[in-house]
Each structure stands twice: as C-alpha cells, then as structure tokens.
Image 1 (tube, rainbow, N blue to C red):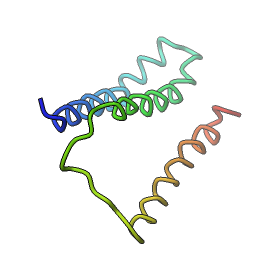
Image 2 (image 1 turned 90 degrees about the vertical axis):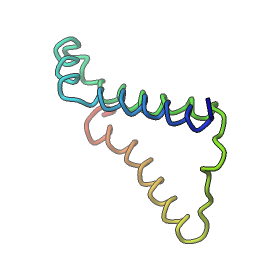
Image 3 (image 1 turned 180 degrees about the vertical axis):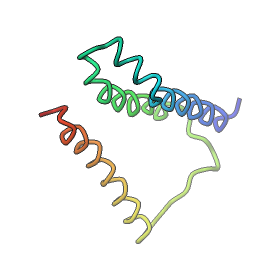
Image 4 (image 1 turned 30 degrees about the vertical axis):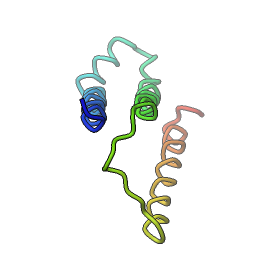
Length: 99
C-alpha cells in the first residue's frame, strides 16, 4: 500500500469519526447519558480532534504531494494558523469551561 493511500485512509477515518461526534444525535445521547458531566463534552471533542491528528507525525511522509509556500502567502497562512490557535484557546474561556 502506498504512503499516500495510508495518509488518505487515515484522514478519511478521522473525518468520519470527527463528523459523527459532531452530530446532534451523538451530542444528545451523550447529554442524556453523561448528565452534568456533559459540560466537558466539547473539551473532550476538541482534545480528541487534535490528539487523533498526532499519529500523522509518525506515518511515513508521502512522496510527491509536499509543497513550499514562501513570502507574503506564507505570512498569510501563518496568520490564519495563529488565529486558529487563539480560537482554540479563546472558545473554551468564552463558553465558561475554564472559568
């Protein structure tokens, strides 16, 4: 099996799990079963979302799909990435999870 197929397979499985955990049916079931502990569901969802991407660091790097972005476009991408990191930190604080 090629490295690209392994990567794509993992990402497809990740996307399916990520989407299933975000559905209203799963959230309602979790709310019924967890009761007051459901308040931590969003936090666990985010931790799982990030944590399940970590195995990509240990998978063999696929050949031929890498690219390099330099100059002003790279600055734009870094700005978007930084904004996403701030969002990961800001959202739980504004939702009252860490307060």
